[in-house]
Amino acid sequence: MDTTYGYAPTEKMLTPTTLAEMLGISERHLTDVRKEDPAFPAPKMLGKLPRWSPTAIRRWMDNDTGTATCACINTESPHTAAAGAKTRTAPAKRKRAPRV
Image 1 (tube, rainbow, N blue to C red):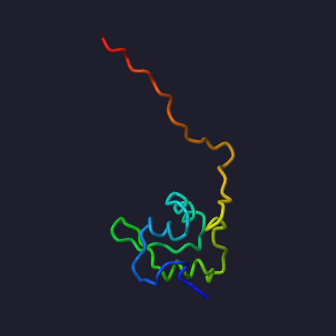
Image 2: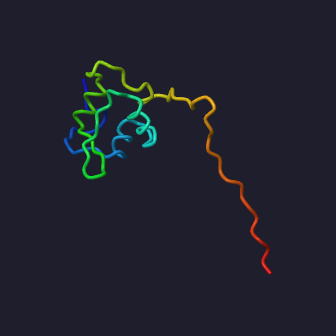
Image 3: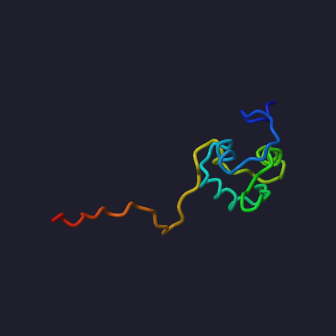
């Protein structure tokens, strides 16, 4: 069984960008998964920069922690906006004052 998930084995710490790419989700959704899944591995902080061990992420993806991983990893996201939540819309374009 291939446990590299399509990536070469490495022990280089993963940034949020590379981790989101590896999981097949956006960085914003990675933030949501971190908040919602108590089994998600805590990052090692390098100053203010979060980094994850590939081994910890593989263990989480293999579900060795006893809890389910986020169902949206590599599939359609089941997460929906909370009832009554406002969605962002682009601000209306305003006309500029006419040139004189």
